Amino acid sequence: MNPNRTKFDSEMQVRPDDLDMNRHVHSSRYLDYVLAARYDQMARCYGMPMEEFIEHGFSWVMRGASILYKRPLGLGDWFVVRTWIHEIRENGVAVAFEIFRKEGMKLAASGSCDYVIVDGASGRMTTLPVWIIERYSV
Image (cartoon, rainbow, N blue to C red; front, side):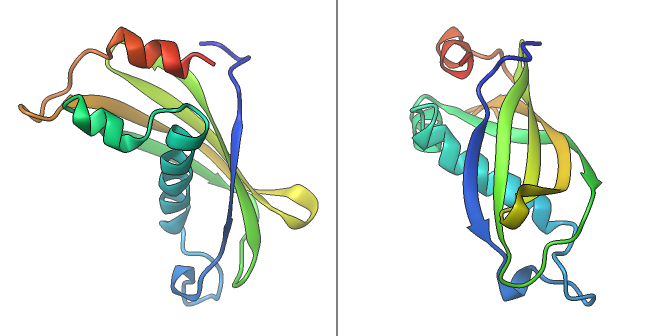
C-alpha cells in the first residue's frame, strides 16, 4: 500500500432518478457515482481511458465493495467524488473513495471497491500488466 497516492476529484449533481422513497439518494447510487468518477478519472487524470483497456483486450470487474454512509445527499445537491488507488495487487486494485456534499465539503459517504482485471477473450481474471501498474502509481 502507498498512502501517498494522488487523489482525484470529479463533480456531479444528484438527479431526480437517483432518489429513493425518502427523497434522498438511494444507497445503490453511490456505487454508480464511484464508477462514473473512475471512468472520468481514468481518462482525465491517469491518461488511460477505458477504451484503451478494451483495445488491449482487458476489462475491469468489481469483486466487492464497502460503503459507510455518513449523511444523505438530496435532489439537486452538487457533490464531489474523490478516489485514489489504495492498493495495487497482482490481479487488480483497491480503490478508496470519499463522497462530499460540495457545499461545505461535508463527508456523505466513504468506502472502497475491489476491482480485478479480466482478459477480454477468456473472461477470466489475469495478471495486471506492468504498464498499467506504472500509470496507476501516481
